[in-house]
Every structure is written in C-alpha cells, then in structure tokens.
Length: 240
Image 1 (cartoon, rainbow, N blue to C red):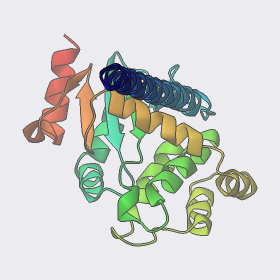
Image 2: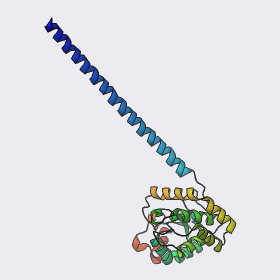
Image 3: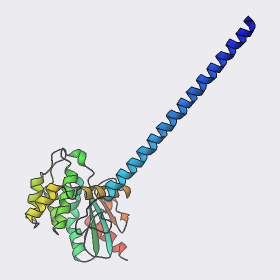
Image 4: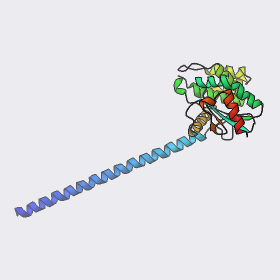
C-alpha cells in the first residue's frame, strides 16, 4: 500500500510541476505578447503624431510648393540656403555673402530658397530660433521676408539669452514695411510655428546637420566655397 501511495504521491507531484510549468509558460507568452502590442501601438501612435505634426502647417506667401522655404528670385540656378536666426555663423555668412546673393537675385541668375530652420532653441531660454523663424513667416506674408531676415541678423541677440522679444520682432517687421497690426497678430498667434517645425523637419530629412548650409543646384558648397567668389563660381558652373 505504501508503495502504491508513494507512486501516487510522486505522480501527483509531477502533474503539479507540469501544471506550474504550463502556467508559467502561458504567463510569459501573455506578457511578451502584451509588450509587443504596446510597442506596436506606440510606434503607430508616434507615426500618426509625427505625420500630423509634419503635415499640419500653414505656409506663408512666397513659400515653395513643398512649403519648406521662401523663394526669392527667378533665375535658372537654384540656391538652397539653410540658416538659423540664432546662429552666429549664419550672421557671419550673411555679413560676408548677403550682398552677393542679392546681386545674383537682381541679375536673374539665381532662385534662392531660404529655409529658416530652428535647430538652436537650446541656446535660448525662450525658443528664439522657433519664434524668429515663425516671425519671418509673418514678414513673408507681408512680402518683406528678405528685408526682415537682413534686419534680424543685424540685431542678432547673443546665444544663451532670451533672444529678441515678440514685441521687438514686431517692431522689426514694422520697420521693414510690414503692417504693424498684421505683424502683431501673426506673431502673437504663433501662426507660422507649425511651418517652422515643417521646415526644420524637412531640413533634417534632407541631411542638413548644421547652419549655415548652402547648396547650388543640390550640391552642398564646402567651407572654402562659402564666400562671394566661391558662390559666384558655383553658380556659373551650375548654369553651364
């Protein structure tokens, strides 16, 4: 009897052990499946959110078809210029090359697409890169984008500061010929902040990792070419 009882007890122990293993296996499978579903759901949610962020924007007057920049000029050669209004190197670029670009535009040699990106918000306590780019969109709406851009770089605030206030941006817009009321309502409403995000996202996707970046018919100019003679030579070569 004791032998049969022992065998029964041993069999029961084995059955219980197998049952515990099955329960643990089911728990692991369920947990893995739940985690996988959460990952998939997160990816779907991020994709939808990112898609909405990049597509839901209002482009100002003068923007190109893709809504990624403001077009100045109608020449046969296309220059893409990526700048951040907070970027000291961009101010240096403008100081050195701004008049050259203006001459090439006026001579109908180039079509310049200005991409005012917001890469340097971390160097401002008020997201100045985004605010100034969005304000440039307001100036573009008033047909004064380039004038506003030139004025902004002339008054560029130091890095790691609050940057120019919204009121100061409005004042600059009015000083270059934009209706003060229109500029004020546009800046204060943040009308073109979503456009700035779109411009910045597109620049990142295009491989632009720093500012200033200048491309002539799609070819990025090197540091040694980013001067008046280098730009004019690149435009001449692209126009052949």
